[in-house]
Amino acid sequence: MRLCGAVFLALLTICLGGQPAAAGKRVALVVGNADYQNVPSLPNPANDASAMADLFRSAGFDVVEARRNLKNIEIRRALRDFADKARDTDIAVIYFAGHGLEVDGTNYVVPVDTALERDADVYDEAISLDRILVAVEPARRLRLVILDACRDNPFIRKMRRTIASRALGRGLASVEASRPNTFIAFAAKEGTTALDGDGRNSPFTAALLKHLAKPGVDIRKAFGYVRDEVMNATGNKQEPYTTNSLGGDDVALVPAPTNGASTGPDVRRDYELAERVGTVEVWDAFIAANPAGFYSELAKAQRRKAEAERADAAEKARATARGNGGTSEASG
Image (cartoon, helix red, strand yellow):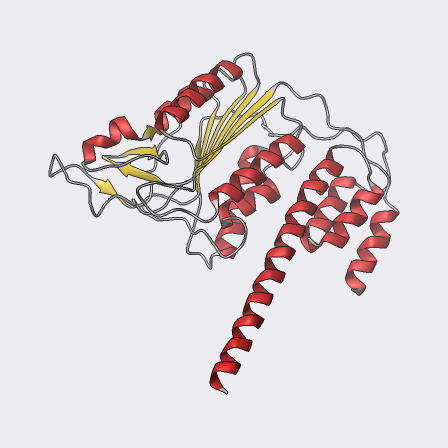
């Protein structure tokens, strides 16, 4: 409590920073597939997609299309429509959370109605990474695809191989970003799988929520922070992988704020301080000191996340207490 009080007093004394510099048009498509019909459901993609959509909205994106549990035809239509929205934009982002798989070196995301009886069915029933890249291609400055889908192939035990030499890999395959101004991020490197974790969000998405939208931070550096955080959170069991074809200029998902004050506390520094503590009380303090502006909107999203995590922890504690009580009664 002493630490929180100190942070509270410090945050109340900081000056309001400037607003973000004018950003070009930015659009995002966020898909969370969790309720699969023919393979086990996944616990986190719905939460992950919801949190990422909130992040992009807080970051001031012009369009944020958030979709859940899409079937094959629905994903294809969503990608087609998003390509139209990406025209005349500077930045286009597609984020997918759900099942993914690799066949013969090609990566696919899995619609909720997919049923792969044979390896060749993947060409019709799953969505290739190349198809996703086509949807972001109209953007001029940054074409970003994020896949939190590097899990074991859920169909591998019942898929028949039509060609004996066809490879069915573990996790997703590494690729090279061949199109200009493209950045592709995987939750785990080639041949390894991503963890869902024990929290509300997967380790990869939890790190994205902390680092991806930091104003003025180059996208390559932001994903470096994401990599470090995921490795720390998973005991080095999971290492994200990225590939890009960006040039020499920095490309930030969110522009740096303009700060007219030449002296005094920096709002970004204090936001990062509050982020390290991460409690509801500290976010309340930051928002009280910064009632408007980009960092205030980010802080509000982080507060909602902290509040949800607190509620989840309380419910788990109550369930544990009930279980312990039941065990004691049974033993007596």
